[in-house]
Amino acid sequence: VFLVTEPDRVIAANVETGQFFDFVISAKEKIEKRFEASGVAVLVTNQRFAGVGVFPVGWRTTRRRADESIISAEAVDYSAVIVTSDRVLTFNGKTGAWSFTDR
Image: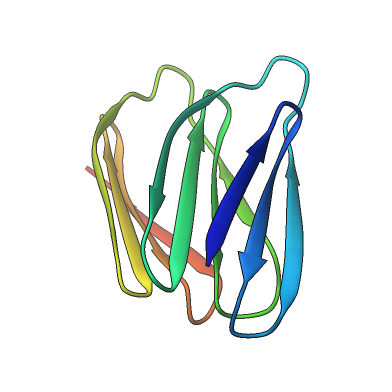
């Protein structure tokens, strides 16, 4: 999975399936961080978390909570983990699924 950043969107190129997926950035949304590995990519914006992987469903998002700050994040192979002030979130690039637990 490769990411191409443009002013109003991020394009994910899924090399395994030959597909392209657009992540449209809303007017007040700003990308704070991005993490990429061979089979997964995750964006952290001021409003949500977005993940894309080799599973051909496109971008999957989950909302950030009010005042939720990022402690750490990492992407390896087909997985990503984000630790915030409130939660631990994981994204599976093979299934396209987010999961989380409160801290």
